[in-house]
Image 1 (cartoon, rainbow, N blue to C red):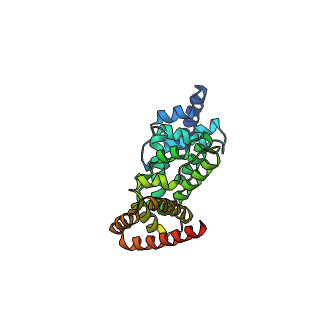
Image 2: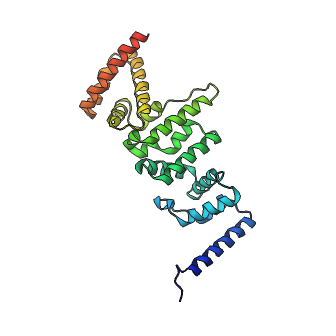
Image 3: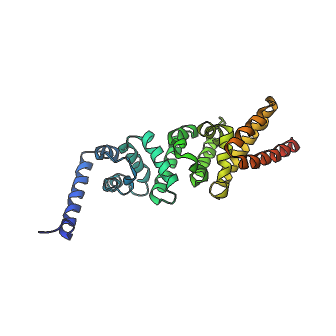
Length: 251
Protein backbone atom coordinates (compact mmCIF):
# COMPACT_ATOMS: atom_id res chain seq x y z
CA UNK A 1 0.00 0.00 0.00
CA UNK A 2 1.35 3.43 -0.95
CA UNK A 3 2.21 5.85 1.86
CA UNK A 4 0.53 9.23 2.09
CA UNK A 5 3.88 10.91 1.35
CA UNK A 6 4.64 8.89 -1.78
CA UNK A 7 5.31 10.82 -5.02
CA UNK A 8 2.08 9.42 -6.47
CA UNK A 9 -0.06 10.60 -3.54
CA UNK A 10 1.62 14.02 -3.53
CA UNK A 11 0.99 14.36 -7.26
CA UNK A 12 -2.63 13.29 -6.80
CA UNK A 13 -3.15 15.77 -3.97
CA UNK A 14 -1.65 18.52 -6.12
CA UNK A 15 -4.04 17.73 -8.97
CA UNK A 16 -7.05 17.61 -6.65
CA UNK A 17 -6.02 20.96 -5.16
CA UNK A 18 -5.62 22.50 -8.61
CA UNK A 19 -9.04 21.19 -9.65
CA UNK A 20 -10.65 22.52 -6.47
CA UNK A 21 -9.12 25.96 -6.93
CA UNK A 22 -10.24 26.14 -10.55
CA UNK A 23 -13.74 25.04 -9.53
CA UNK A 24 -13.98 27.85 -6.97
CA UNK A 25 -12.77 30.34 -9.60
CA UNK A 26 -15.51 29.18 -11.97
CA UNK A 27 -18.03 29.73 -9.19
CA UNK A 28 -16.62 33.28 -8.96
CA UNK A 29 -15.85 32.94 -5.27
CA UNK A 30 -13.59 35.77 -4.13
CA UNK A 31 -10.46 35.18 -2.01
CA UNK A 32 -12.37 36.71 0.91
CA UNK A 33 -15.22 34.21 0.42
CA UNK A 34 -12.72 31.36 0.42
CA UNK A 35 -10.96 32.71 3.53
CA UNK A 36 -14.24 32.81 5.44
CA UNK A 37 -15.00 29.24 4.34
CA UNK A 38 -11.56 28.09 5.52
CA UNK A 39 -12.16 29.35 9.10
CA UNK A 40 -8.57 30.28 9.86
CA UNK A 41 -7.27 29.57 13.36
CA UNK A 42 -6.77 32.59 15.58
CA UNK A 43 -3.25 31.85 16.81
CA UNK A 44 0.38 31.84 15.65
CA UNK A 45 -0.16 28.64 13.64
CA UNK A 46 -1.68 30.91 11.00
CA UNK A 47 1.83 31.71 9.74
CA UNK A 48 2.49 28.08 8.75
CA UNK A 49 -1.08 27.00 8.05
CA UNK A 50 -1.78 24.90 4.96
CA UNK A 51 -5.08 26.77 4.70
CA UNK A 52 -3.20 30.07 4.40
CA UNK A 53 -0.91 28.60 1.74
CA UNK A 54 -4.02 27.47 -0.14
CA UNK A 55 -5.54 30.93 0.21
CA UNK A 56 -2.35 32.55 -1.11
CA UNK A 57 -2.39 30.33 -4.21
CA UNK A 58 -6.06 31.05 -4.74
CA UNK A 59 -5.57 34.82 -4.42
CA UNK A 60 -2.76 34.70 -6.99
CA UNK A 61 -5.22 33.28 -9.53
CA UNK A 62 -7.00 36.65 -9.35
CA UNK A 63 -4.06 38.97 -8.67
CA UNK A 64 -0.58 38.12 -9.95
CA UNK A 65 2.27 38.79 -7.48
CA UNK A 66 3.19 41.31 -6.16
CA UNK A 67 -0.30 42.78 -6.68
CA UNK A 68 -1.69 39.88 -4.68
CA UNK A 69 -0.16 41.01 -1.36
CA UNK A 70 -2.89 43.39 -0.17
CA UNK A 71 -5.88 41.30 -1.40
CA UNK A 72 -4.33 38.20 0.19
CA UNK A 73 -3.80 39.91 3.54
CA UNK A 74 -7.32 41.35 3.42
CA UNK A 75 -8.64 37.83 2.84
CA UNK A 76 -6.58 36.50 5.77
CA UNK A 77 -7.98 39.25 8.00
CA UNK A 78 -11.55 38.44 6.96
CA UNK A 79 -10.94 34.74 7.59
CA UNK A 80 -9.66 35.75 11.01
CA UNK A 81 -12.90 37.57 11.81
CA UNK A 82 -12.09 41.01 10.38
CA UNK A 83 -9.35 43.61 10.76
CA UNK A 84 -10.57 44.57 14.24
CA UNK A 85 -9.53 41.10 15.44
CA UNK A 86 -6.64 40.44 13.08
CA UNK A 87 -4.73 43.75 13.39
CA UNK A 88 -4.10 43.66 17.18
CA UNK A 89 -3.14 39.97 17.01
CA UNK A 90 -0.65 40.61 14.19
CA UNK A 91 0.80 43.75 15.80
CA UNK A 92 1.33 42.12 19.19
CA UNK A 93 2.84 38.99 17.64
CA UNK A 94 5.24 41.04 15.50
CA UNK A 95 6.40 43.16 18.46
CA UNK A 96 6.91 40.21 20.81
CA UNK A 97 8.54 38.05 18.13
CA UNK A 98 10.98 40.52 16.60
CA UNK A 99 12.58 39.23 13.43
CA UNK A 100 9.66 36.99 12.43
CA UNK A 101 9.82 37.52 8.67
CA UNK A 102 6.23 36.54 7.87
CA UNK A 103 4.71 38.70 10.61
CA UNK A 104 6.83 41.69 9.61
CA UNK A 105 5.88 41.35 5.94
CA UNK A 106 2.18 41.10 6.79
CA UNK A 107 2.31 44.08 9.14
CA UNK A 108 4.10 46.26 6.59
CA UNK A 109 1.52 45.24 3.98
CA UNK A 110 -1.32 46.04 6.40
CA UNK A 111 0.06 49.54 7.02
CA UNK A 112 0.46 50.17 3.29
CA UNK A 113 -3.10 48.96 2.71
CA UNK A 114 -4.44 51.24 5.44
CA UNK A 115 -2.55 54.16 3.94
CA UNK A 116 -4.20 53.66 0.54
CA UNK A 117 -7.58 53.00 2.18
CA UNK A 118 -7.31 56.44 3.79
CA UNK A 119 -7.38 55.13 7.35
CA UNK A 120 -6.37 57.90 9.75
CA UNK A 121 -3.56 57.55 12.28
CA UNK A 122 -6.03 57.65 15.16
CA UNK A 123 -8.10 54.87 13.57
CA UNK A 124 -5.02 52.72 12.95
CA UNK A 125 -3.75 53.26 16.50
CA UNK A 126 -7.11 52.29 17.97
CA UNK A 127 -7.32 49.13 15.84
CA UNK A 128 -3.85 47.96 16.88
CA UNK A 129 -4.69 48.01 20.61
CA UNK A 130 -1.14 49.10 21.46
CA UNK A 131 -1.79 48.83 25.21
CA UNK A 132 -2.10 45.04 24.90
CA UNK A 133 1.50 44.86 23.66
CA UNK A 134 2.74 46.36 26.92
CA UNK A 135 6.08 48.15 27.56
CA UNK A 136 7.77 46.06 24.84
CA UNK A 137 6.47 48.53 22.27
CA UNK A 138 8.90 51.21 23.48
CA UNK A 139 11.98 49.19 22.53
CA UNK A 140 10.50 47.81 19.32
CA UNK A 141 11.16 48.77 15.72
CA UNK A 142 7.39 48.89 15.30
CA UNK A 143 7.23 52.06 17.37
CA UNK A 144 9.05 53.59 14.39
CA UNK A 145 6.38 52.18 12.09
CA UNK A 146 3.72 53.93 14.18
CA UNK A 147 5.67 57.18 14.04
CA UNK A 148 6.03 56.94 10.27
CA UNK A 149 2.32 56.26 9.83
CA UNK A 150 1.54 59.32 11.94
CA UNK A 151 3.89 61.50 9.87
CA UNK A 152 2.42 60.18 6.61
CA UNK A 153 -1.09 60.94 7.89
CA UNK A 154 -0.05 64.47 8.83
CA UNK A 155 1.24 65.06 5.29
CA UNK A 156 -2.01 63.93 3.68
CA UNK A 157 -4.69 65.56 5.83
CA UNK A 158 -4.90 68.80 3.90
CA UNK A 159 -4.05 70.91 6.92
CA UNK A 160 -6.20 69.07 9.46
CA UNK A 161 -4.53 68.47 12.79
CA UNK A 162 -3.28 64.94 13.50
CA UNK A 163 -2.79 63.89 17.10
CA UNK A 164 0.75 63.14 18.23
CA UNK A 165 1.91 59.65 19.09
CA UNK A 166 2.57 60.97 22.59
CA UNK A 167 -1.05 62.07 23.08
CA UNK A 168 -2.34 58.63 22.07
CA UNK A 169 0.19 56.67 24.13
CA UNK A 170 -0.35 58.68 27.32
CA UNK A 171 -3.84 57.42 28.29
CA UNK A 172 -2.93 53.89 27.19
CA UNK A 173 0.08 53.70 29.52
CA UNK A 174 -1.05 55.50 32.66
CA UNK A 175 -0.46 59.20 32.08
CA UNK A 176 2.50 61.59 32.00
CA UNK A 177 4.69 60.09 34.73
CA UNK A 178 4.27 56.45 33.76
CA UNK A 179 4.75 57.13 30.04
CA UNK A 180 7.92 59.16 30.66
CA UNK A 181 9.43 56.35 32.75
CA UNK A 182 8.52 53.64 30.22
CA UNK A 183 10.03 55.65 27.37
CA UNK A 184 13.18 56.35 29.38
CA UNK A 185 13.54 52.70 30.47
CA UNK A 186 13.84 51.73 26.79
CA UNK A 187 16.81 54.06 26.22
CA UNK A 188 19.34 51.19 26.11
CA UNK A 189 18.04 49.94 22.75
CA UNK A 190 18.79 51.66 19.46
CA UNK A 191 15.44 50.62 17.97
CA UNK A 192 13.03 53.56 17.59
CA UNK A 193 15.38 55.95 19.43
CA UNK A 194 14.27 58.94 17.33
CA UNK A 195 10.59 58.21 17.94
CA UNK A 196 11.14 57.91 21.70
CA UNK A 197 12.96 61.25 21.67
CA UNK A 198 9.99 62.73 19.84
CA UNK A 199 7.59 61.39 22.47
CA UNK A 200 9.71 62.90 25.27
CA UNK A 201 9.93 66.21 23.39
CA UNK A 202 6.13 66.35 23.15
CA UNK A 203 5.80 65.42 26.83
CA UNK A 204 8.28 68.11 27.88
CA UNK A 205 6.51 70.70 25.72
CA UNK A 206 3.20 69.87 27.42
CA UNK A 207 4.83 70.00 30.86
CA UNK A 208 6.18 73.50 30.26
CA UNK A 209 2.68 74.66 29.30
CA UNK A 210 1.04 72.94 32.28
CA UNK A 211 3.68 74.27 34.66
CA UNK A 212 2.82 77.81 33.63
CA UNK A 213 -0.82 77.20 34.61
CA UNK A 214 -0.39 74.96 37.68
CA UNK A 215 2.23 75.92 40.26
CA UNK A 216 2.42 72.51 41.89
CA UNK A 217 2.33 70.56 38.62
CA UNK A 218 6.05 69.78 38.48
CA UNK A 219 6.37 68.72 42.13
CA UNK A 220 3.37 66.39 41.85
CA UNK A 221 4.59 64.97 38.55
CA UNK A 222 8.09 64.13 39.76
CA UNK A 223 6.81 62.81 43.07
CA UNK A 224 4.60 60.40 41.14
CA UNK A 225 7.50 59.54 38.84
CA UNK A 226 9.83 58.85 41.79
CA UNK A 227 7.30 56.38 43.19
CA UNK A 228 7.54 54.46 39.91
CA UNK A 229 11.33 54.58 39.50
CA UNK A 230 13.39 57.01 41.58
CA UNK A 231 16.60 56.70 39.55
CA UNK A 232 14.88 57.28 36.21
CA UNK A 233 12.86 60.11 37.75
CA UNK A 234 16.05 62.01 38.57
CA UNK A 235 17.40 61.53 35.04
CA UNK A 236 14.12 62.65 33.45
CA UNK A 237 13.93 65.66 35.77
CA UNK A 238 17.45 66.67 34.76
CA UNK A 239 16.61 66.29 31.06
CA UNK A 240 13.43 68.32 31.55
CA UNK A 241 15.30 71.14 33.28
CA UNK A 242 17.75 71.31 30.37
CA UNK A 243 14.77 71.39 27.98
CA UNK A 244 13.12 74.24 29.94
CA UNK A 245 16.28 76.32 29.88
CA UNK A 246 16.71 75.73 26.16
CA UNK A 247 13.10 76.70 25.52
CA UNK A 248 13.49 79.95 27.43
CA UNK A 249 16.56 80.82 25.35
CA UNK A 250 14.66 79.99 22.14
CA UNK A 251 11.70 82.11 23.24
